[in-house]
Amino acid sequence: MNSCDIVIEPVTTKAQMKQFVELAYELNANDPVWVAPLKSEAYALLDPKKNPFFEHATVQLFVAVQDRKPVGRISASIDHLALAQPAEQGMGPGTGNWGYFEARDEQVAEILIAAAEDWLRDQGMTRVLAPISMSVWEEPGLLTSGHEKAPTILMGHHNAVYQEWIEKRGYETAKQLYTYDLPVKDGFPDLINRIVASGERNKKLKIRKVDKNHFDRDASIIMGILNDAWSDNWGFIPFTDHEIEHAGKELGKIVFEDINMIAEIEGKPVAFMMTLPNMNEVTKKMNGKLFPFNWVKLLWWLRSPKAKVMRVPLMGVVKELQNSRLASQMAFMMIEYIRRNAVADFGTERGELGWILEDNKGMVSVAQAINAQINRTYTIYQKRI
Image 1 (cartoon, rainbow, N blue to C red):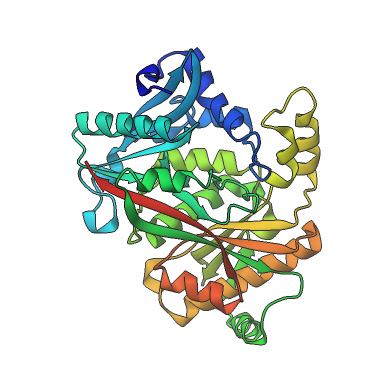
Image 2: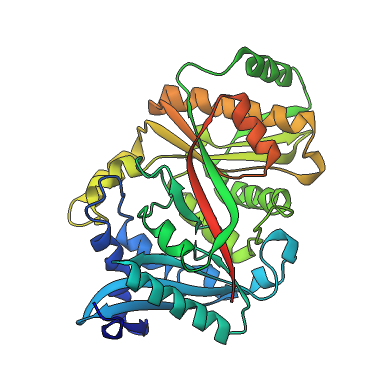
């Protein structure tokens, strides 16, 4: 194949947007563990009218075309909130991103990555962190270990060969993100049970369920704690008020009271743990399509979901309590309460924590204490341009 035959087209039309979205389904069709995202959600994430990320970001999508057929895609983006972050936290001035990367072969990959770099350079960027599709809160990193297992809800899955193709373009590891797998049916070690029991004797401490009747309030509480708790973390970008509102509406569809907890001290919310049933278990066979009949199946599942796996995508403790014994105690209490309810109400057998930054000592210690094991690694790369 001659590289001159490959044309990189900026996405500007509905037809090109369709090519951009549909290509992922075509290129991953033969991967037995890939889970097709619901197409309605895939389009919504890329729609500036539906995704508040676009309110503080500049984005350009590209499709690689040969003989009038799409053979690759990539997004290039600049999160202007990220530019305002301290450089030592990973983002900072001059840092742009690319993501949504799919390529039929290495030659297509090389041309696509070069196109994204050129666009970022033209926008005044001097450094790339990638892949990030597109917000760091959506799908950060490339899957570099754990390809043999199907991804859980809201997690990315990538062709294993992409790692070599990206690294050959001069990209080096900036940070690794881990997910941890653990069995939950039989409970945790005795030490954890003693810590939980001790916390239950603390009359100032209360662990409560998220209240769906007041979900807007609780979603705002959770996001407020998150913005505080994660503010010093590598790669942190604060949620805007509109993003908090949007997340509340979207997550409300898949948040269940018994498996989402808020910790309070003397009535003040200070920590939370969010848990989602692995909806991929029911959507895997849908190939991204809700119509004509899959929406009924999904609606029925959402009424009383069963999930062998639960994912804990987010948890946080306010900064003033981090690195304290109380922070660990609250974490173990929420994990245990959620474990009990997940097993009893959802038929859950395993949990997945993550992602977790490789150097987040507090969360790594919590995962190790409950005998969780790393099951996937996602790598965020960097390169000077």
